Image (cartoon, rainbow, N blue to C red):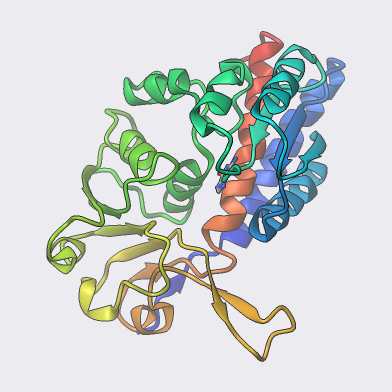
Length: 295
Ligand code: GUN
């Protein structure tokens, strides 16, 4: 039986509709949620992600600005810009697109953002709040993964969720969301990583398998249980001479083979990606509501 496809395009459209209503209520009070997005250099993937973010901001009714610095910008210049954005009441959310050039200290930059305007939820204060179960905002990709599960009828409550990947952006915060004693969470979570021996031994035990490794098609059909629900966070560019760009996007799972075996799976592209962007808008709108004393 072919798996159900969990469409991030459809689900993110739902979220956009919900956010448009919240933005309309803010606008009645004279508030337009604002998002500042900062990029240093011209990483092609970053450019493409940021275009998507501006487009979705416009669809939601969020005012956004993309600020671009050249690759060789000194760290102090970037930090000074962040200070300026922290003080600018137009912006309720700020993000600095990662990765940054090597001469810039990523931690220092993330910590310079006002935690109240931390649209990515990467600031240690917000990561800490999330871990103790008192979140302000939620990190976009893990929040997107969670919403995809809830909105497609696969609540993680009482399930064994196996996460492959332990990054600060995906694996670790997803773990923090799903283990909370909270309706819609309450999962038993296993986190696997590059030093996990015999990865398949763990992935085969998953009711819900979330893969955020960042390598093309490493999860093969023999590594999943029949009836599992699979969320593929990976976005990998693989060479494809039939495409004008010379590449196409694939996930971290062997999508075609897994589709023959699992209950449900997310595609790449059109899976987690659009949900991540929708959740960035959720954070921006939520931050605007908080800063206006409405949340
Ligand atoms: N680079 C890859 N993913 C992300 C993200 O979610 N936010 C930012 N700022 N940069 C990224």
